[in-house]
Length: 297
Image 1 (tube, rainbow, N blue to C red):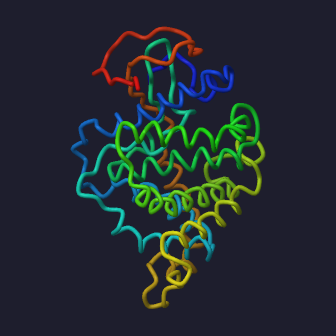
Image 2 (cartoon, one colour; image 1 turned 60 degrees about the vertical axis):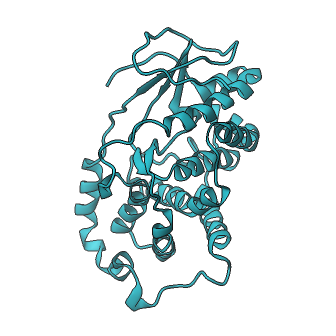
């Protein structure tokens, strides 16, 4: 793993609030340009599919614990999967937000590609947009807590900046929201079970975030399907993860070990140099290495 200089955009924005508008424009513009990069050759591989990768955590949680609500939610989202497929999939970061973007002088580094996949760019945008909104509810302390005030404003600024580079279909962004909220719901459950290490509740994010995610998930499903279309599948039509859930406790230890061994702490960084707003608080300098992506408005 290579260390790169700079500060995360979230810290840059909160340490000098006047820089926030310019940095958020850079964020939206940069994300749109990232989606224009050549699509990796892994396209077509089910393991690289953005939706499949985003649902993997919920499936893993259900392998080690019984939760009828999460299982039902996963089943509902799986009915949406055919609608999430696009004919022109692109490279998606999977976790694009101000804590994963480093700025240093005139360079920008996109870090933490562990959730990257190939799919509909609107799914990537939906995650970034709701992460801003989530920060207004779920931040616990430090840099994240400042996002409680800035979150909704930054979400609008980010979407506007992205839209100037690449038009967005608001309906498709909305279609991806249930999947992203289900992931957050599963993430808080994994944290409660300490499947990813010591619990972060109360430190990285606020307690009660899981319940908020569940409620927001249900609202998002209603927006997508309508209140009368959300039904519980007949037992004969339930996905395997629902029908077999009562048989999984005996495999919990084995599945948990496999889950842990499959995770990697390695972070890959992609450097995307380009001009930043004037007076951006940065540190260090980085030589220019990759194809230049213009981040100016």
